[in-house]
Length: 139
Image (tube, rainbow, N blue to C red; front, side, top):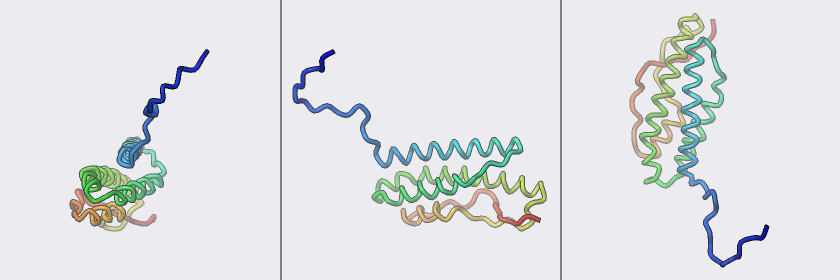
């Protein structure tokens, strides 16, 4: 088999490099799928390791914060959706822990610090928590 003749024309690569924005969207899709799986498992009575959640949120927020302000502003609705999913999962975890008697402290509304920091950098305010959340200790 012979190689095609080189006519000197520049050809685009088969897979163009991914832009930072594309990578962020791909990471967000993966993180949302993880949260959906964790919520489904929780509803089935199984608790997943949620360590990847904190690392994923932190990484994505850092990536968004590194973008120029105009581009980063476009991600505000995505951050709001991410925070909403986080709160849904957190609320389900708190309810499960309360029902099991593992959580005995009153709820304290909050959001992940990294998500709030991203909102602050963008000059916007995060929405108020949609549901109570809490932290606690095992009894």
